[in-house]
Length: 307
Length: 201
Image (cartoon, rainbow over all chains, first blue to last red; front, side, top):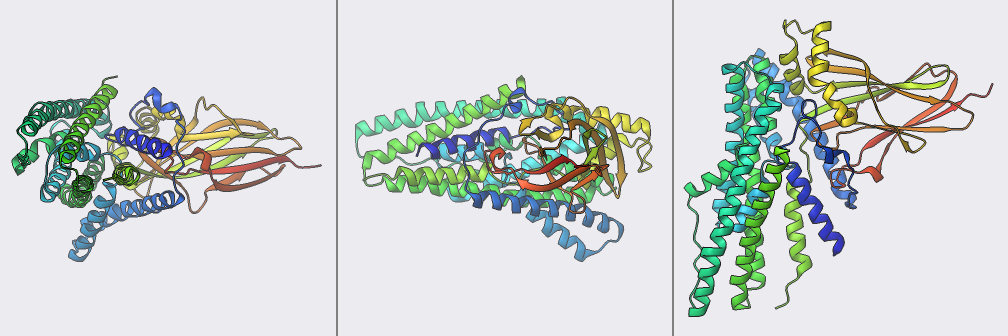
């Protein structure tokens, strides 16, 4: 059990490191990266799986660039469809890895009463904003400011990340306060009045846009590279289409995680459903824990960027 | 009702593992090592990296100023300054051991950058002096990015080459370095094990 707990902690830490990774070619290594942390023993199945996924991602990356060149030279609709299919799969796999705000998204899903449909929308919004942010950034950077990718990898990336992490921390704090002062205190009051059902307040779509923006505003590095590549072959329109299709793939992965979290939460509450008061208490604990994770990750990431 | 904590933790672990433990490199590099020898033994390792086409595009856009698909000397210097020197902070992604003792990489020499088939190729030399003796010396060299921004694989054509090695008994193999698994233990680096011994006269 201790081993499992340790494993979870390591995984969480890795997720936080991967939220917005630095390009080693341009960004200085943080001192902690030089220290090797002993890793827990991971089942060989996961290692082999990851190895295969890596190989697949490498091949898809090569196929994307080669097909893009071909399409740019001879406009072939069949090739174009193939390219879009590859981009979709690439996005799907790409979002499986660290980053893309999945930990924050999962924590947000835990800390808010949500329907599976809203989980899908939240995931989709994050992926699309993540990609739109990349399109916006590359367009401004290259066409308006005539700056380069290495220029972006330094200060602008740090500033965007700082803003995003600051907003995420604020969102975590807001959710924590909201849960404690509104949900929990109200719950206590309702318990005192006895037998009054707590109705979960459903977030409307508009409410999902704000967290999606906070989480997704850091541009997707993968999309940036696709866009820059498309500029280099004089086919920026193709790059935008590719990035958007990739975002669909990413949306699928992120949404699946959102739904899985919602159902996991439901499952946990179902497990303890036999004890009337426990459901409300555990539900509040999950909500608070989700908000605390968002707050802590936000602050951790903010501080790491500040240093 | 008894709550199965183990089951709950597994559910949570599964979700978290999905978020962290999978493929996310942004840059793909094909690496090959050339072990270079002199009259004393090993003099160093020549490293060759073929960067993926997408990342290559960013380097080409930034540094091929005259857009002739060729890096002139001044452009190579710029590539070195702008998109190579910083890798020193990451030990150039290299992990070298001599007889199981970590070798500290202090600098790289002979940096070159060229454009081949729309891909940027980096090559550089890391001096590693190992005197060959009558007993076997074991040199291990791995090339991997522990931050996982880059995925570095070995060239399928020539992963390892030996240069000027006629005076020595040398053999090499690529093995999994399980004890140095990184990224939470999910990625096992592949390293080259070179066995070096002076030939008997």
